[in-house]
Length: 72
Image (cartoon, rainbow, N blue to C red; front, side, top):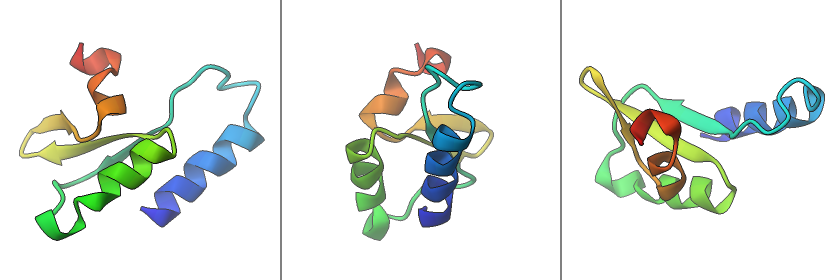
């Protein structure tokens, strides 16, 4: 999570002109275990949508992710 957030924040500065208006999304390759469910809150608090793979499907994990066009 920390590495992913670091990359998102780095890109938001480094490529500001190219990605203007883009919404940051962090994607995990698997669903979270219950003991680390707090990750979704941390990402939400930092305005990062969070999605995870559940089998072959992609699931929104936090509120920001639920509003992404792919889930609308």
